[in-house]
Length: 98
Image 1 (tube, helix red, strand yellow):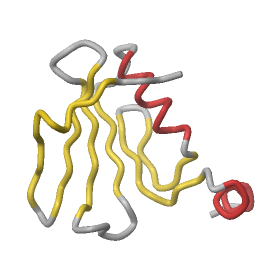
Image 2 (cartoon, helix red, strand yellow; image 1 turned 90 degrees about the vertical axis):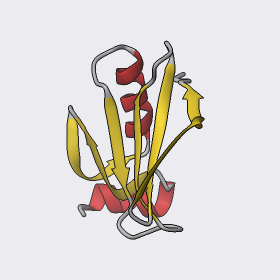
Image 3 (cartoon, one colour; image 1 turned 180 degrees about the vertical axis):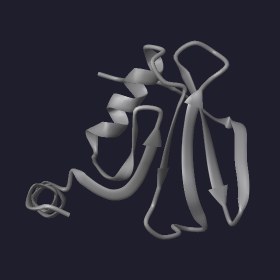
């Protein structure tokens, strides 16, 4: 981690050391606005999904994925919890990008 990322993480709390993957981004560590940018790219039709993986298991969850939903302006949320892929209509949310 470079000094800029360390400053963002410790002082401003805007940097995450998680792995983020999408068709346009695939690496560990991202600025928190990267999630908003990915949702915006999904809404605009540039990408179809975004995944984030925490550096360690959190409450059994090892992967969170947002994919373009079946309805306009919606994303379907998927979680890998204890090796099981959880997807449900309850996990559909409206995209809101400022």
